[in-house]
Image (cartoon, rainbow, N blue to C red; front, side, top):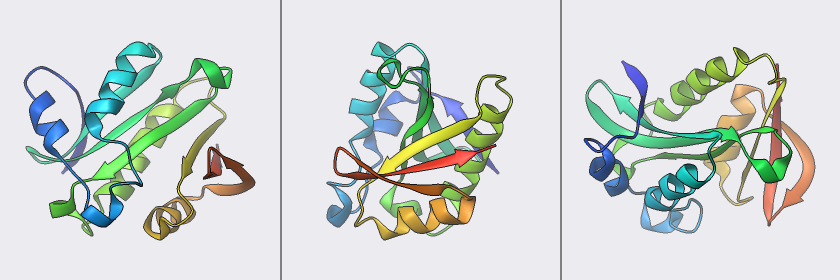
Length: 145
């Protein structure tokens, strides 16, 4: 069973130890940076992605002040040893379900490095749409409820 769990003192180390393949290092920020950022940006939530009791990934979402209250999934990563098992898709569906419950959330944004074909395939499959915009050298996608 895939679950999203809060980052706590008990799981912090295991979440920051999760890593991507060497060829993906420039595609996703390290989890420790995202967790630190989440605690500065109060309207955001960092979560561990778990397969049963095993941490397999990290997800970070919420409202970002500089984006005028828009909802974003700012980070999604699955550890290099847990790839190709469908965890990213389930985790994204779970967070989209959480966001759909919020009255003021009508759309969800995310961005990714254009050469990240796996991310693009996942987001296309989930129903995100390409906005045609590039933000900080990343493709901007939107999901509308």
